[in-house]
Length: 166
Image 1 (cartoon, rainbow, N blue to C red):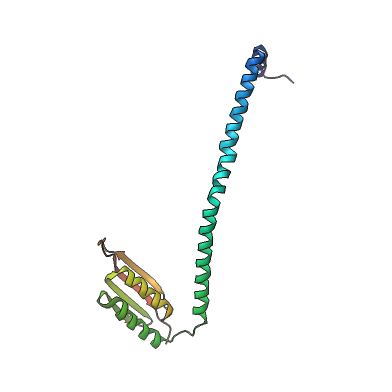
Image 2 (cartoon, rainbow, N blue to C red):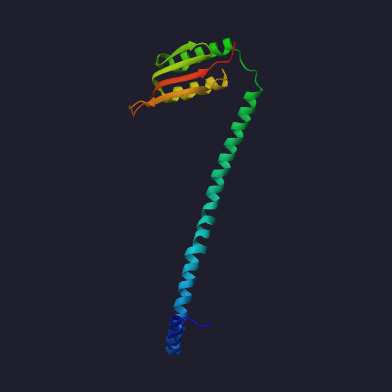
């Protein structure tokens, strides 16, 4: 089997170099190999190792939050489901207490539509929590738009909730 001509040329050039030049080229190739090894293997691994502690803390916090949510979900599942009338009463009271004049509740059979006009974001969040926990209702549909006021964020739109059957 015949060797390629380019390889023969390279071998002749190598042999024509002085021993000192060959040593320098070997050193340069070794240095290049070490640099590549550093950039491709060692540096990324060290960066990952440095970030591992913070990443582990973040994941642990997420895990604890998930555990709290799971416990809350199990507690809610254990509670008796409110009937239609009780859920409706709880819903009406919570709308008046939390959202006041910023919301209007309309009933249509098994659905309740909440129309919002400038409802404060924090009050809406509290109301959603209360509706989920106390009336055991979650929105079936939501069409919300954040209002342009940057000082006091508020929401306009509609939330549709499905009430328990009668």
